[in-house]
Amino acid sequence: MRTWRRTRGDATTGDGGSATSDVVSLTGVSRTYGSGDSTVHALREVTVGMPRGSFTAVMGPSGSGKSTFLQAAAGLDRPTSGSVRIGGTELTGLSEDELTRLRRERIGFVFQSFNLLPSLTAAENVLLPLRLAGRPAGRRDAQAALDRVGLGAHGHRRPAELSGGQQQRVAIARALVSRPDVVFGDEPTGALDSGTAADVLGLLRGIVDAEGATVVMVTHDPLAASVADRVVFLADGALVADLAHPSVHEIADRMVALTGGTGALAVAGVQR
Image (tube, rainbow, N blue to C red; front, side, top):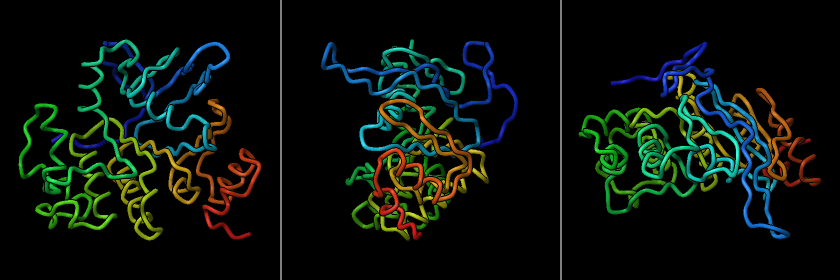
């Protein structure tokens, strides 16, 4: 079984060339919708890379382009211009079938709403990506993935029999079972109470530190973002700040500067 490893230096690309150690890279990425006076610039010339074995949080005010950034980086939406690469593979020239295959085999997703199929057990939900990709999938694979997230004894349960935190752990196990190049999280703690959210963030932090996984997480919560190695900020579709190992206060202050208000402080529960 393939294992996560931290790597340094150059990574080999899928076409025989070379690339940096960035698992995800966006270069000059723009995304526009509409035309003329109704044109919306969701992303504006965004250039950023996420190295292997790193945890990156993406933040910004409402309408800043966070969701569009995630969709472009994960191959869910095609940019209007620019380059997106995952593990050395250029996404912008791939067909829809090739993009679907890449997402199934090389990308893991964790969503705010868990997105588990209610009729399947936890183990069956975990194995779904492997089965959709036509890869061998057995009980041992599900057990190993659930063991990694502390739910080894719950594989027979259906989502309705699990707490919200347990359902999100199943979703993380599902994201990890194919050993993807990168795991994208879209507000993965948004539907959880603070204690459960801390447990889920600790789990994501652990797979980065102990296993060299790469995680990119969109969040509105400074407390969640403070778990990351790095926080990048978007505003009006542009990358406006990039902080390494920031504190909760630094993140909240930056959000206040971007929004012109105190909403971020309230979300974080930051005491001054």
